[in-house]
Image (cartoon, protein in one colour):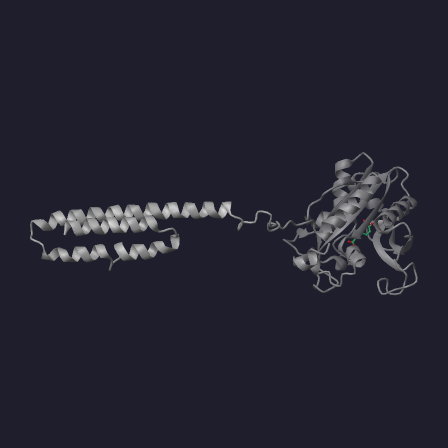
Length: 339
Ligand code: DAH
């Protein structure tokens, strides 16, 4: 019986050596080492042996089994290595095939618009001044000449944290912060940032949006300076052919107050964009109210200033013919990737 086992081992080893395809390995394993394999068959015949011979035979069979197991794993390893080397050497691996491109993002349309605004105002000597989104009633309203009973508050309802703290409804409170920080030096800043209002969300209005505020305080600053700055801005932002016009308006924090319009890209012929008027509104503005100057620490007898406030999404919306302001906050790549 011992001879039969050694013969079996030899046969199995030779066959394993001849195998040249890893796919044929499982079949070999089943045949010799499997539950119904040849070696197991041999073990079953041990019952016929005498009690003295049985343990001796058991040892031999187990040793052969271990030898064949080891040989199997070694062969498996070497066949896999061979196969890999063949694939690498052969031409079935095309290293010139282009890889999958890495998806890189880009700046949001709002950020692009903001940066363009910073650049234009930067060229005119304006610095960017950042003020907080969470404001107090005092800064958002009272110091801007909007006391508690003032009807203008109706235009600026917002999200309240408590009686005194709210999400700012406009970037104007930054005017007071800038004045109190720069006092008693002249100021030229723009104040960009997110604003919030208690608004129904529709294609034309969101409860969050960006504004850019402008503030200049100095000696002898006049309304014509404001108009000059806005004319320059409109031309640099929207094209040299743009004209600017002003209309009287009202804001509690400016006196006089104006609205600034710019000629439409239809060259005042009238189109859907400008609702047939030939003009587009671009900013609210005015001369800083004496009360506001004083609240900022500047004596109105000595100092004057102008302020302006404009939206950021709406002009971008007009420029690109975007139908719905909600796209700016929807995070839909199909929209974002277009800009
Ligand atoms: N704060 C105003 C608003 O949100 C916009 C504005 C108007 C800002 C006139 C100004 C200004 O600085 O002078 O509606």
